[in-house]
Length: 318
Image 1 (tube, rainbow, N blue to C red):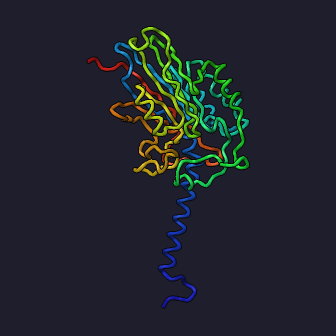
Image 2: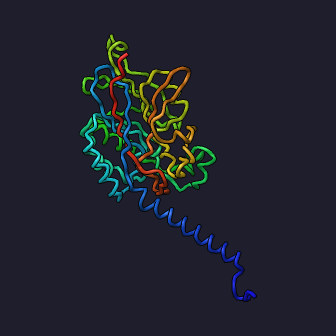
Image 3: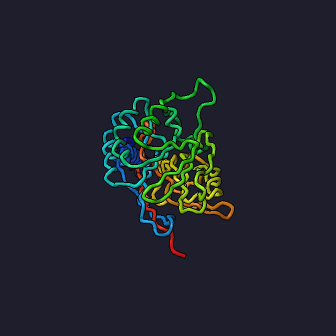
């Protein structure tokens, strides 16, 4: 006979299962906050898109740093990236997560400004993050408030961009510009953040009489990889498109991947180098999984923070 003071075996088993699930959940949260969020890595990719006879060219792609004061581990890691000695740095936005972060961020990125660079902004270069229900991302891309009362705090975007410019990086916000690097002409075309609907296409830079026949590489730069942006640049002949915004999903399921992309990009494309096809044209698109997180959601799971090094090489001989 079971004593009246002894829990029923089935209830006891359910209680143990619930306790185990709760402990597992707490452990996963602690891992995501204290370990994986600062477990930085460098993803390496190779792509043959340079003119025939070109030597390899290394592009360091940074995105979604979301810097806040006091992030000393991230700052040290950002400074260490200069040891990679890239030929070009491309920053695809969302650099800030706090209104007082600009001086420390520029200090952390200073060693990388010894190298040529280009940049475009993301929404978190304009506005500070706010507390949000994380489950809202499953209903669609995040949005700013529709009323002035709910709009987030504006950031000093001009100061950030001035700092980048004084470091020698070129602002591609709705602009196009050619830059000669290591004997190769790179034609850049960038847009303001599509997540805010601010993109305006500047086309490709014009200038020389042999603009289209001289060897060159067309690189498009955007923060958020919405399909309309990928379609436009693919149709316009881009050789490569670089973007971020998705955080690689930020919280992923091992063996499955991202659950959300925070835009209309399919979740399986939320991170990595993929070909984008549109009306018979194809453009390689690298989506960075991002370096930081919003300070209101400082958590990553199965999605390590990353910078990306793309080694570009010459196209195969025909």
